[in-house]
Amino acid sequence: MAEKIVSPGVFTRENDLSFLSQGVGEIGAAVIGPFHKGPAFVPTIVNTQSEFEQIFGTPDGSYYTGYTVQNYLREAGTVTIVRVGHQGGYTQTVPVAIAISGSATGEKIVGTLFETHNGSGTLAASTLAASPSASAFSITLVGEAAISASINPADGNDLGDVFGINPRGTKDAYSYNYFEKASKDVIATGYESASLIELANQAFTTDMQNSSTPWIQSQLVSGERHNLFKLHSIGDGTIYNKEYKLSVFNVKAAGSSNATDYSTFSLMIRGYKDTDKRKSVLETYNNLNLDPASPNYIKKSNWW
Image (cartoon, rainbow, N blue to C red; front, side):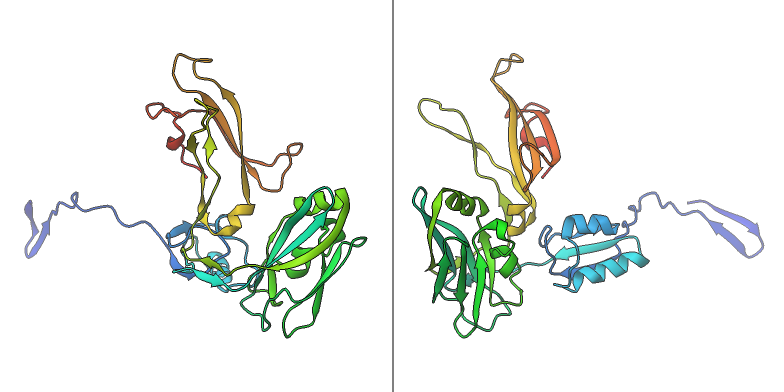
């Protein structure tokens, strides 16, 4: 510390502030609540509306939180979001499965219906009417009028169209699953009948979690396949089950391109609804391997 007299009664003093830590970065307001998608219980800073919608979804009236963020970003450049989810899990009572039969395919489950939060009736497999020519059926919810829908995705009034996929929808049931390919396969080979099946209570006892791919396995080694890796989405919730899919390509056997004992491969993250003819490529990672010492080791890639 240095002290110097400049004029009578006036002193200057030099203070060393180099030891003080750097100031905290801007985080903006904190918005805590439900959102359509995104990481749960993780404070996430966003700076633009497009960034917010990409991570947490587009506001559509289901929750007020999306509009809160939208309006705040118009006045400020940064907001911190914490998405909350259901803790402790929940139980879906007596969901209903829709099964259709064909002479060539046998019986297949083509969809499941769950009760909505806002519904006033009780979901039950009470009645079913089906017409093979129209591939249509009607469902009666206990205490409610019949609701008609189609099992054919080409009809424009299929399960997703009629019931929607929102658990807070206005009807007493929503489409939890709809397997369009299974419906098309049965219809193409000769649709004969449909039935509603009451399923056992579905207990979702875990908290909100991210979605995962099945295990990517090795080739046969001594007559067995071994689990190699699986991918997990950064965001949480079932919405990610229908947002992405994975392609593994350019697989090269160990030693074919270099002297290592590890094969190399590429991964492509694609949009869920794309086709092999019209790919929607979101991210691509080349020359990956399973060698922990390699800079291309798959776990060193910060993605998905």
